[in-house]
Image 1 (tube, helix red, strand yellow):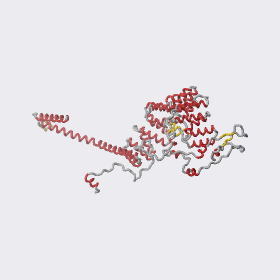
Image 2 (image 1 turned 90 degrees about the vertical axis):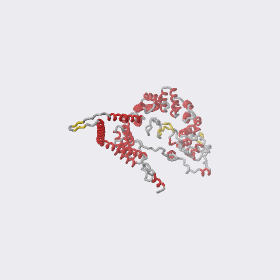
Image 3 (image 1 turned 180 degrees about the vertical axis):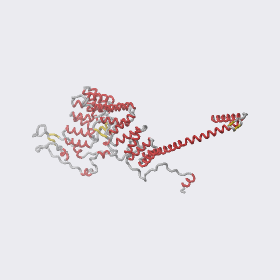
Image 4 (image 1 turned 30 degrees about the vertical axis):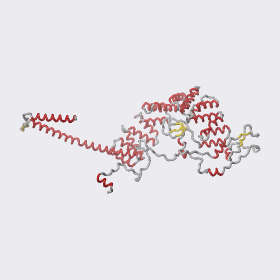
Length: 581
């Protein structure tokens, strides 16, 4: 509305001005040499306006002709950029669904039409990676590293290629250069931190951790935990070389991470040597409540140097009583009590503690039962049976990181280089499958474990302290073969009677085919899932560090159509096409 009013006002002013000019009397005299003209004032104003319009029109034509080459060049450049963007977009889509040939064609088109576009370099590098051409990929990443805007991305690609070529030194050098350019680079700091930890440069690893905290890559809680891990690793390495530095490091580590098992064990050891028993017990108890571990139980048992075995048993029972019964650590407490009871010759107590776990034992339970049989009764046959059962028993928790099982705690994962990756847990390969596959015991083990313990009698003509093992009458025929280490029985002793073999019933022999139910199974068979896992996540565009999949392109029969489908015609043509005309 305001514009309409303003337009009407301007028209009124123009009309008023034209009327005023028309009412003016007089003439304007123009002289040019011998040429003379004297038009009236209205005619002169009209001619002046027409002349101004012509001047403006001629100036516009001259300006358009002057700028035409630049416009043509700019239009060609925009057209090339549009083609390059189209090639880049469809090339990344081709990489996403794994079409190597199509990605290569689009990469070549993008390099022709948009050679300076960083996305064209990225497409070229990723298509080379997907095609398996590492040399071409390295050249593309080097070109990206020379540019200011894609330098970090080029260094990341060169780092991945160096890792593929097993060039650890080159990879670390590239990561260190990336850290100089961008201290907040997560992958570079992770790589340098893992390399320094693997090399044992704990001071350098701590410096990288401090820079990660200042750059905001980790929070305060994670920083405290990771710093405690690095200090514990340094203390374990310097325990035999520089005990003062080791003690200082582990004391700081146990303050930062009180639930870290190796830190608590080593700190309790140093406190015990300094006769700070109560402080050592508190350190172990704090870590035990969070993560029950056999090393903690052993450190708690030996917190007082020179104690008797029965005193250690009482101390371990006190520690095990602090664990809630609903936690998984309750088993660790019972095993620790059994271990201490065997050392203290409290065999009844050890057997009572282990009795709930005998039906489905783990490896440690079976080995403890074997040691108990050997220490209490001297029965080597039953001990061997339990040892054989331990070979095929379920695994106990161990230090595991990224599928790697270690016999001791380590600060970083040897697979991925991740800090604080080791956890005290059961290996994944030893977990039962979805069908609940179990390992059956052999008949020999069942017979040996079901047989009563043998009696020991002293023979008159033997040396003092020596005894003869008398097999019970219910021992099967295979049992004496397992007890070949026992001394021979004297012939004149009437108490010794040969064992009669027990014949199995025909029904039992027919109903238990050995060929269909194998006793031994390989660990690889136990770790196999019931069916192949289904990939639920399909990457759309791979990152530069994605090695890709070395598979062949889809065949013509199953090739998907790329592009928008052709729409059905409308109007009369569409009407007749629906009727098959």
